[in-house]
Length: 404
Image (cartoon, rainbow, N blue to C red; front, side, top):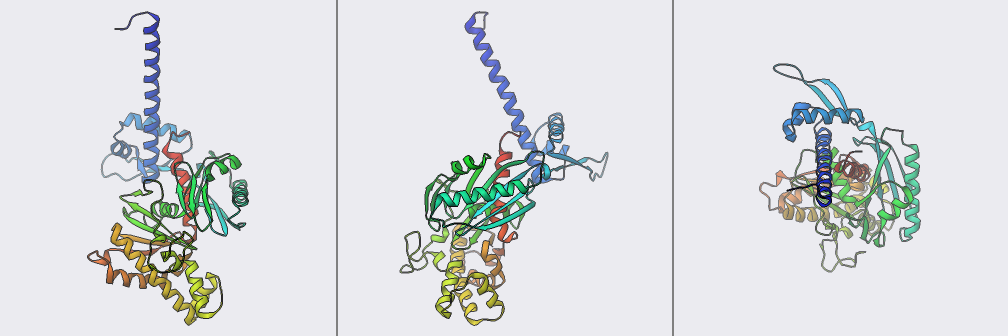
């Protein structure tokens, strides 16, 4: 029983603070639930939000009023109703703020800004310095982001953060690049470096994960619970979406299927192993195969141009790469049981050439019955998937916490 002595008074004050803190926390939690429902389901009515969230109508109404005053929610007008009054439909105001998405390639940096609904405002790409020079590469990346920020239209919330997609293993919890063999990076604290340079929240993830997130939020994966995203460029990264959740694994390094061994006595990979899939089914592999056949070293765009002109050696090179890519994808399907496989990054331009070959391999080899239940698609966002997904990563992280 509480009395008026000083100890009891202190206890009472502490209890009051805890209760007040709980109430504030619950309100922020409810507000986060509400705005994220509107983000995912817009247009949506207040009554629908109440039903889906479990919040009472008075709470929803109060939260909506706050979100409207903050510029995050807008009223779209009356919706359909078979009986009674037509509900006022609510929408997410994506133009309330902007975010930055970056793809860190082996020899380039691609950056863009989007609004909070993922619509691209502008994008730029630059050649990066030697990736082995970490400080120069980070400085180049930071300078490009600063340029994008300066050119992005003003908005109510401004720039809420930036996401970076990196071709390698990343500890998402602290933004450290653990191992990026194609960059030559090991244990690089990229998040802390960039936050020092840019003074905005930074989120680092594997570039295939950011591409997966982009396709889930804005592309082919929007209505698909289980799919695989393959980012095929210099190397091969894989993003895994299982039951609508991005799978990062116990240490954040899940999805390194580019280092699945497909030739036990094969070529030496940058990771140190022999016969990795990316040595036979990547952009690097395509360039190497064409050089072996023709004696000429050409970049991928030129090989693709020759392919469209009927060049036999370009065709043979693409067939070789497609064969190995099909074998790798078949192994992934047998292991993870997705309903959709999306091919993105640079190889998205080769879809019409390699997808029929991949589908044939899947049809002949997959354990699924029937194999036709697995669709293979080119990324709907093409080259922008990684950077748009990186921007989406920052958006999701912003709305995962208290809304400021």
